[in-house]
Length: 109
Image (cartoon, rainbow, N blue to C red; front, side):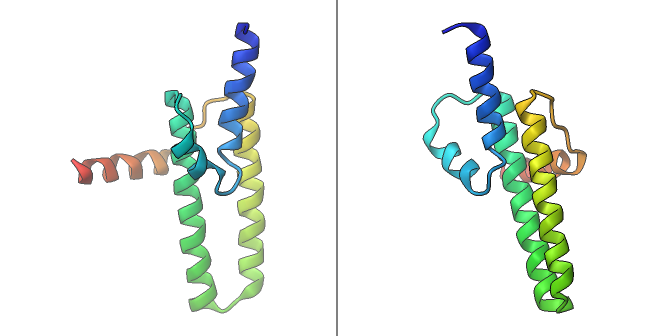
């Protein structure tokens, strides 16, 4: 296997982390995890949890279904954007998710 094929495989693995719920499955079944791959999995998990929390808040407290639909469309577009960026091997850095991850890791220690 040459370097280009390995790079394409890594790019694809990083990209499919942003397909809904697949990141959680990959986290448990994939044995070889690079730092970038783990970061993409964490980003998707945090991103999905934020989406679910905000969706529940919008649904039960605002009662506006149109806002929920718009929020879902924004979630899909942003997920697609991150998928494309991960596939092209651009490093994804989201400041508030990195800070949230640091705080959660500090609580666990």
